[in-house]
Each structure stands twice: as C-alpha cells, then as structure tokens.
Length: 455
Image 1 (cartoon, one colour):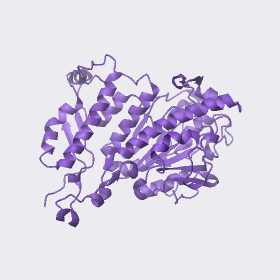
Image 2: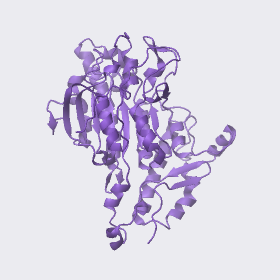
Image 3: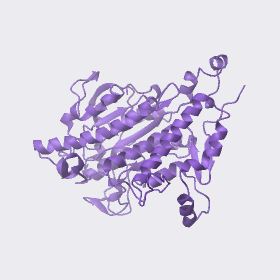
Image 4: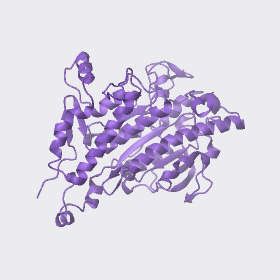
C-alpha cells in the first residue's frame, strides 16, 4: 500500500519554503478508499483538516442600530451594516450583549480606547502607565498558539494595517503599546503585529539563509522572477507521487501565490513593468487602504490553507484611529465622527465606515468559503471572530459589544443565528468555548465566569 505523503511537506529552494495545501495524497487510505483506488477521501480529509481561529478587530465601535438584527434566533434579516455578508448568509452568527468590563475605567479614569484593544482578547485590566511597566494578560490567541503552534511552522500570525508605537503616551496616560497591540504572550509581553505585506510574504514563504547578508539577500531577490522559481524542480517531483486532482490543486495554489506576488509588485517601489513581472517586493504597504486590507486577507487565507499557522489576529486599524475615509465619501476622521453626539449626519457616516469594514470581512469570508479543503471549505474549519472592544463610540461603552462569529469550526460552531446573551456576559466566556473546540481548553481567561457552550 502506498504510504501517504506528510501533511508537513514543504517545497524548498534557495531561501524559500513553500508549504502545500491539503492533498488527497496526504490522507491515509481507509477501507473505502482502498476499494475505490483512493478516490473516496471525504471522511479522511475532514479528519486531516485542522481547525483554525482568527480574531479580527475594528476600532471606535459601530453604529449599533444598523448592526444589531431585529430578530433573535436563526434566519434573521441582515441589518444595513451587515448586508455585504449576503454571500455568506447563514455562515456566521451575531452575539449580542457580550461585554468586556475590564475595558471600563474601574477607577482608572479616561483611556477607553487603549483599554478596549488591550482587553479585547485578554479580559484583563490594563495597568495605566505610559512607561515600560506595562501589564495586561495573556490573550486567547496566544493560549491557542501555545497548543496548536507545535504543529505548524508559525505558532501565530499577527497582522494589521498600522504598526503603531510600542512606547509613549497614546491615550490619557496609557502606553501606545495598548492602543497598537491585540496579542499578548504574557502579562508583560505584547506581540507586535506586522503591517508591511513584503515582510509578511517573506515570513510565509521565504525561509532565508543562515548567515546571509542583507546585500546578498537583495541580490538574490533582484534576480528572482518569482519565489516559485526556486521550488519548480521539487514541484515537478511531486507530479510523480500525486494524482490528477492533486496536481490541479497544486497548480491552483501556485496561481494564487503568483497572483499575490503580482499584486505586491503593483505598489512596489520601482515595481517591474507588466512585461517583466520580477519579484521586486514593496518597501511598505500599499497607499490604498482597501488594497492593503485585501492583500492581508489573501495572505491569511494562504497561511491557513498551507497550515503554516492555525492562529491569527488581524487589526483593521489601531484603537482610536482617526483615519479619513474620503475614498468612500467620508473625509472626516473616524474617531472624531465616533463622537457623534446623536447627530444623524455623523451617525450615517459612521455607518458608511462600518459597512466598508464589513465589505472587507465579506471578502475574506467568501474567499475562505470558496477555498476547498477535503470535503468542505476552509471556512467550514475556521472560527473567525470579528468585532470591537467598544460598543457605541459616542458612549464608549463596553457592555454590549458588536461581535460576529463566522465559520463552522469543524462542526463546533452553529452559525446562522442572532444570539442574545444575558446582559454583561463576559466576552471571554465565548473564547473559552472556542478554546474547547480547538482542542486546547483553559480553566479561565481574564474575567471569565464560565464558558459558552452553545456557540
């Protein structure tokens, strides 16, 4: 009987490591598969496909009236802000009345924005300091990464559109580290996110060379047309050990990687011409915010597809961001508008920003849903949390947060519902339920009081 190839198979070249998606040849042949020549792989594929989790964050809260469904339970109508998710309707749930009470002042005064992000995944009161003596708590993503990371090349992937300072005073006496970081490996160690697509791409695909100088690296990249050029020989070798369906899947995957390279080149400094699609990687992020978000979403999909990581955080913008959205007809700053004072015009503009963010979420979820893995899709195997640590930006409240949970979680999640929890149910209770589903249970997380089992 032919032995399956390893799920950890990586195609390697000079300074390159390209992981592969789940292939039929990676699935142990069971009795049914043996009887049919290996074509019946649905059940085995489901067992081989791991569960993943991603936590997406948007700042400054949302306009809750256009976010919250009017019906409770299954089959709710999509409110105006959520309408862009019609393509994945039934594959996500809205969880109302979840709270992060440790984001409230609790005697610490102003600083809701800093606390909102620092608390979102930790459920822990951030120490109010602008100095080096920062303290928060271990975040749910890092708890998952500590368990699942031993199976993957990267324990976790932290990405976002803004880097942000790691010191200094950014919000009423709170260090900038709180406003810029969502992931915390320990009480005193945050995990900075990466905003430069070039560096994220290299982290996913370029293995580097021990002792290689920067000058040598630049020279090597200059003469490379594509990162795939380095692994073509090994890829041809794969053709001899996989079937037709797997060869097609590898071709589709390589096409996706190459398309991402071309898009990166489009905004590269001194980018190659269309006739010479060389691997000139960008020195920084794209100027267009939407393009930046979508490139990061594409990288997240590839990271999950290749099992390079099973845990990610994705921050659309730092907490308190005053980014202008003039490209959708909203030139005012986001944070300024969030203090709308019940002004209907400002609320309408906030809703436009909220809807734009949901359009980007829809892009990610639809791509995960289209990406096949075994007998299902990547979305079927994912738990995707999207939300903010502030409810209404004008009130700065933390007791009814906008929380959306998408995906099937490998059968753990029950999407397609609007769930209204008891008032002030800790958001961390949801995370404990997710950790159970990921196979890495924790007894407690931050201010948790139990675990949500019906998620």
